[in-house]
Image 1 (cartoon, rainbow, N blue to C red):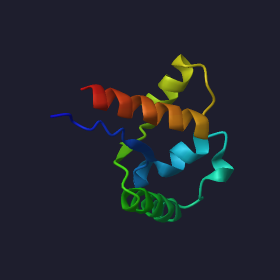
Image 2: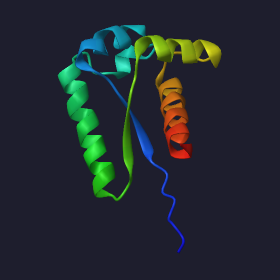
Image 3: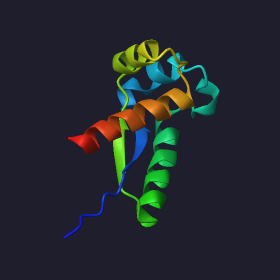
Length: 97
């Protein structure tokens, strides 16, 4: 029997206690809501929509130190593109394991 390999969609996820520090570090901070609860509402709505559309979704918690080190190692800015690439790398790694 063949098993369907559905790739998960990763969503960058933040902990409330880390959000302000992470947001302040991002070059595109103006694109992120200034208040964690506002960000959480948007992220939960996105997650819900993706799940409703039949996607497999994985939250990837962004750790400030690990993300910044990853950005340095990959010579990229601390922005939405980097967050997406970081999250997809982690989701791909999880899928391999």
